[in-house]
Image 1 (tube, one colour):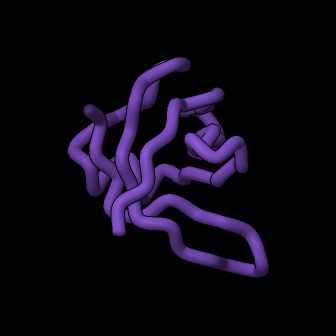
Image 2 (cartoon, helix red, strand yellow):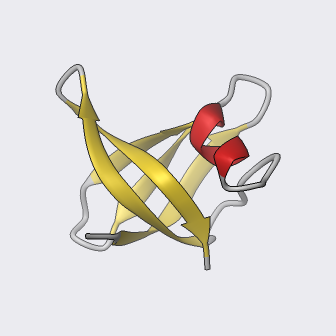
Image 3 (cartoon, rainbow, N blue to C red):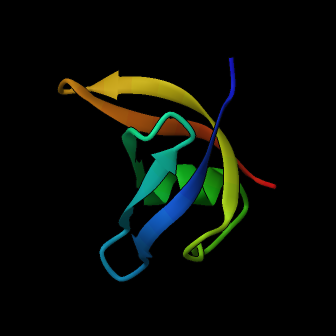
Length: 67
């Protein structure tokens, strides 16, 4: 099930960022998900949809789509 959220921040130089989920939780996003979405970067405040995966106990965005 796809989740919705807004990009809190994304640093293309480092290749990581955070999405604030609609429920208020924070989800990590990395360069691999951004590239698979056909993007080079994400902008603060962008609305995104993603599948929530877990890596090392943290929520990670996968199958990212910018809406």
